[in-house]
Image (cartoon, rainbow, N blue to C red; front, side, top):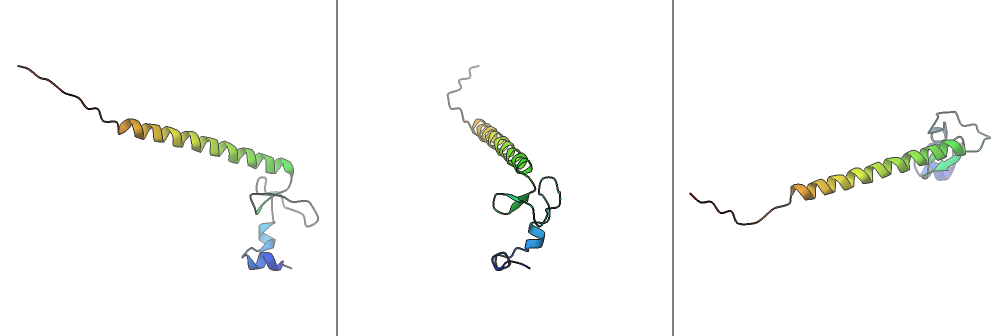
Length: 88
C-alpha cells in the first residue's frame, strides 16, 4: 500500500525503497533504511557514508577543474599593449 504523501509527490514507494543505492542490496520491509539527499536509500550507515565521500570528492574535483578552467580563460584573454618600433 502506498502512502498518500509519496503517491501525491509522484513517487512509487515500492520502487523508491527497493535496493541500496550504493551496493544494490535489497532493502527489507522491516529493516532500517538510511537516507541521503532526500530520497536516496542505503542499507547501512557505511554505504551511505561511502556515497557521501564519493560525492564530496566529485565536488572537490569539479571545483578544482572549474578553477583551472577559469584561470586558463583569463590567461588566454590577456591582451598586451605597447609600442613596436621597427627601423630599416
